[in-house]
Length: 424
Image (tube, rainbow, N blue to C red; front, side, top):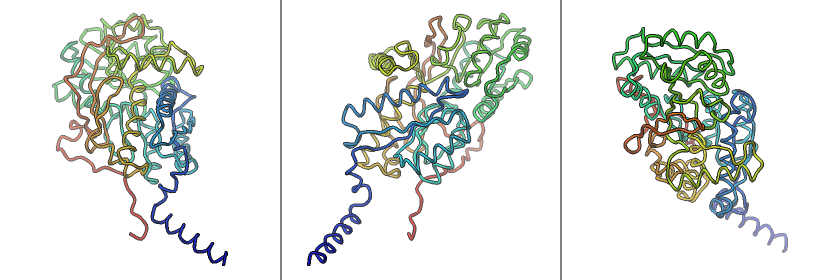
């Protein structure tokens, strides 16, 4: 009789489990895992370590406020060590072994391209926090930083109209972002009538250290005036580049540098005074003068000091740091809006989401996975901060694919997304 009763009870339990679904059964767990996929060693550690730090700060804040749908967030931090193949391996481990609900990570486009097939194969979700070259729209990625029309194009436009530059030296690290970014820039410059002889394009490897010859060529290129550098140098190579630029006597008056990958965090590792007057284009600066941003900056410094992180209270915030930070809150808001951690439901909940970020109000695009943001151009000051010298009129809507590379208006379809259920 007892055996028969047990069989009936087990049967009823199995029926209830089937009706509720896996997610409701998981409600008994008090944590939800998220992945943090940033280089903590290698050439990109100069930039990516701070993104790990600010994601952990967001997690701490959210957990202190009660978590996400009653669950505490458990971050699983891995170090892909600036090794692009290792990014894919670590991403798979996070998704398959750790069963994380979402991943926050990557910096370079080559690292993002490396992990993209993994996220699409498993229909998992990545929040990517760094400005990039566009020409991509995956339903498995939310891009919280700039597309070319939110950074590259406004910057080139500024150099032409305000600085009156007529010659452009496109210098970058040799990988996906700089090469594609420069395709967009060259296409744009040509629509503005800039002749081929006024555009020079050059690339150096990751971790390149000797810029003597290249700066010599820039000096010759700029000798007649009206020249600028549009720089997509990434990682620690920025330190010797700017140093050599100053060593050869070049200043922002002779040939201003407009950087797309140098922000406040990179300036911490540089001798700043010779850089004064050079420019950068971003969607956020630490110098954004609002109470909300001042609180964010103060909290990040305190978090770093409290946790014994290098730099402590002297740490700074910048555009990728802000984008990494609010990405965690966007995911939280989408989960709560969907009432679920399910990737497909969370994805739908992100579309059109309006939210407050440290740098002001922002909005997720209604369909293309990207973020509506303001555009800023800043001038480097002696203290390693930026004086904001240009701000867009409101939020700029992101283009996944550049109209300068697709003048016919025909854009590729999105990749990735929900998988068909077996037997459906």
